[in-house]
Length: 258
Image 1 (tube, rainbow, N blue to C red):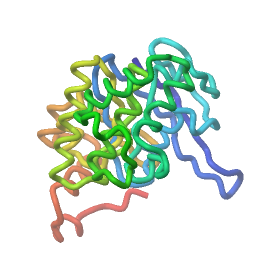
Image 2: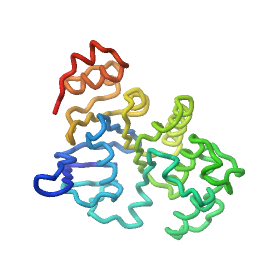
Image 3: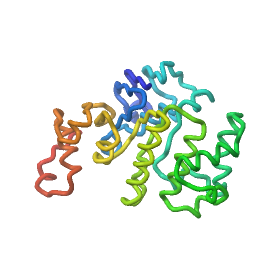
């Protein structure tokens, strides 16, 4: 469903330039979940922003559902690919009702049947019709993220780009949202590309995981190797140790991979 080859992104020019992505390459199978993990600044979210068209200064080759992507995205692309952002507080317009938030994409794409689509997608994410005319500030964090997922689903895409979809939520709510995403993938045949800092989340959700460092993919692991903490790359091994929790002796043994 997604095939990326030789993806490079450079921000700035000359001595101030930053090579954010360096020859990134991976493929995501249809109806599977592929994870991108790594420390902050490793380039994970930059990959998603390139895919969704928020960053246009890139080189390389990207194909989605067999079609090559240019640097500009049209409405057809956004019916195929949608993104769920990390912050459910900042990604929803505070002065728009849930009905307007969900109706707007349908109207832009001139799909018709707005009311039916809104009611159906609310049901899909586990929210009743009573939420339709509320405002985001009247919802909990978990409910807001469900609305963000509903907004992504209302165009019936094949691909969801998930940027830390549970990191801003309480631990108890994280599991509910992850279970919702798993159910939606099964029911709707969705393909996910997920960015996360949490190795336990990607181990639960993903068939394969790419570990990123300084804009490069240093290793790709399957679920079994990730769950058993078996990695070949030294940075990957260090990242897995860090994910197990704070240990002064372990931290002192770390190497600064600059």
